[in-house]
Length: 244
Image (tube, rainbow, N blue to C red; front, side, top):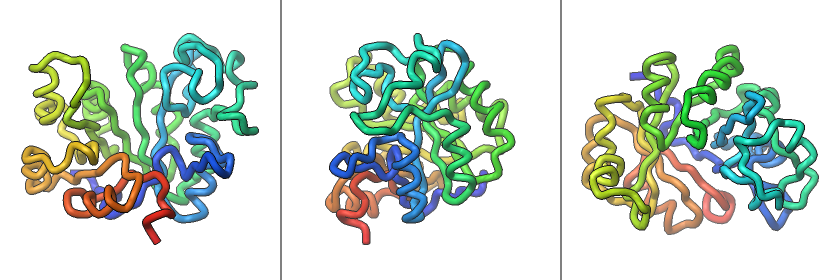
């Protein structure tokens, strides 16, 4: 197993963002704030129509920019003037984030899956292969995690999951995903599990076998106290309200 540097880490979900202070999620400013406090950073990757890799969570631009357009259909020229949540912050390139972080804190990189080929994985690794800082990857897509096992097995990799309650997916698929029975396929080093879906007997069993468990997304003291019982690292928002 890879050296799991995530153990006991506090990870700032989409950076240390704060709407009241006009610090939007997944912005360079939110990452700088996390670095200043020494927190790890969770980021989300998408690939644009022109092959550029950007850091942004949603498939659609509307929530964070007001523009109703699918991100995967855009080029960087289409989005470079857009601002995040009515601030002066813009959607950053992956390269910009890496230059800012520069190994100061670990990165937890989530691979989105609105593009069905593996161009996001391929293009991002062209950028990440020379990065000297610590980073791990994760995805809800077990085949994305498998791609890393097959191509970059030295990189720490994780499977994102939950109990999928309320999700409109078939019973069999839900059963497979919530119990991460895809582990035989992609052999993750860790599982990132929805804190609201814990405790889980399956996750407890995997933890007993040495697979680290991360809890997401922790937003308050109650979540954090629960996560300390069931998890090995913590993906958090509103961190300074309950972690001193």
